[in-house]
Image 1 (cartoon, helix red, strand yellow):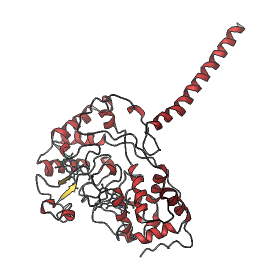
Image 2 (cartoon, protein in one colour; image 1 turned 90 degrees about the horizontal axis):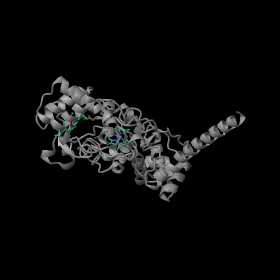
Image 3 (cartoon, rainbow, N blue to C red; image 1 turned 120 degrees about the horizontal axis):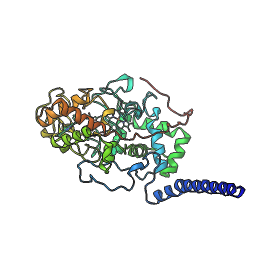
Image 4 (cartoon, rainbow, N blue to C red; image 1 turned 135 degrees about the vertical axis):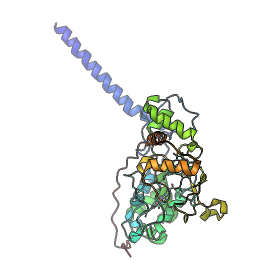
Length: 365
Ligand code: HEC
Ligand code: HEC
């Protein structure tokens, strides 16, 4: 009897130790493998969860899943994050990139047009910064070739952050912690706008939203979307939406005329791509927006002409394809679009270093 108890206790001890060992191996050794393969999850890219190593059953679809993780320069991304949340890059000391690209609300401000310096209203709806790395160029008219070139724009835009590059750089240069960080990353104590925008762009590169339900479906997990969401996707393809909204971003990879089938008459003064090329045929041509996380970023279109995703879908059908959808078709397409909402970046809000006696004071005029 006694021996049997001892044996049982020993048995349980052994099992407990094995479990602990297994846990240690899973936690310590597995990430090391992931790191070796270049799949470093910096807390910005999200973990693989159910997607790792599965065989793709829908790999020939025109929409591709968002890659789970990317390689990041951690120090640069951290600096870029601070700058993204740095109000002193604005003249008023109050506006940040996050003011208009709020990472709590899908990377946009959910306003018809953004509120900038001195409460000026901008002329155009703010697109999301989420997944912006998948855009062929930045801005509605594609006038910035990449995220780095884009990031210089808002700082010096009089109705956005209202500052200028010299002033913004002099603020950072006056704060010893920033000087130190820039030196560590760029090997130089002298801060300039090129380094500032480079760091911000590195942070923005991490703002992806993988693991949406639709991405899991693309990877072969059929049960992750419902029958009517799948029908919505089939309609999205059959009706022709996918000719413009495709690829990883479900858009973002071409310029197209808004009003292809029928002239778009609600806004005729925003000329789009024409402003960049001055080519007559580029009038009313815009970068096709990403439809990732689209349910989070109302109102829709460059002129924010609707708050309703169903109405946006109907406008697209009418003006881009010359079609009228039934309510059932619209609802199914909207249901499909909602499956494109992915894991939002989980951001640890940065603590910023204090100003010094040399820091230019905020100016709200
Ligand atoms: C006052 C509001 C405001 C602020 C502040 C602001 N933005 Fe924007 N952002 C906008 C608007 C509006 C647009 C669209 C402008 C256009 O296309 O002409 C835009 C466009 C963008 C785009 C292009 C996205 C795309 O799909 O084309 C990126 C990226 C971006 N901003 C990043 C930033 C960064 C980084 C900062 C901080 C340095 C910043 N923004 C500050 C309002 C703002
Ligand atoms: C010929 C190309 C083309 C086709 C086809 C097309 N779209 Fe678009 N889509 C665009 C362009 C360009 C815009 C941006 C219009 C603007 O605001 O200037 C856009 C914008 C949108 C938006 C608003 C995005 C935002 O962030 O504001 C939604 C939603 C959308 N499309 C869904 C669809 C659906 C659903 C279909 C099919 C019924 C469709 N599109 C067909 C080119 C296209």
